[in-house]
Image: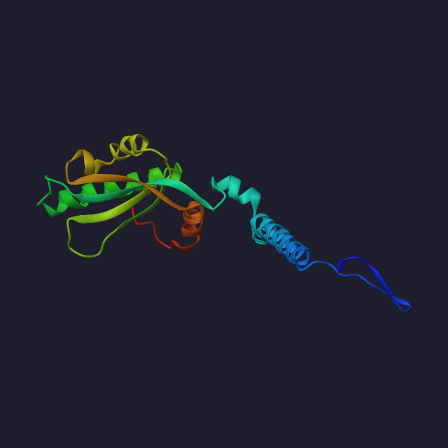
Length: 175
């Protein structure tokens, strides 16, 4: 039989059927693929900071749920410039209060003259929580603005925005 050992001179030759060689080769390839896939699945970002991720409420992708608000022109737009300026100042003070409480991460106006006037990104996970926060805004109460709320999934790094902004803000927008 060709796969049995045969003594030829001082050497021993071993013949292994081709099917067994292919089977062993395929088994080795399969094992290498499983091992390499497992290595990639468990590899971590060398910059990953578990403590910071936990502090900011990040999931395994570095993301978290927020609520984004689109501020739209409301039905009661003030014509009187002094009253409008007073309402705007109260609106900005409310923004500063919500930011200081950690409930508002991003706020800002759009710079074109369109019905959507600005955005808020609330550090809450439900529309109901965000709705309660928007009801505290004087411009919403006056009907000058309305809010359209949407759950949003974004980088947990946004939570650091307020601390960084404090280092950049020379003058407070609400003053």
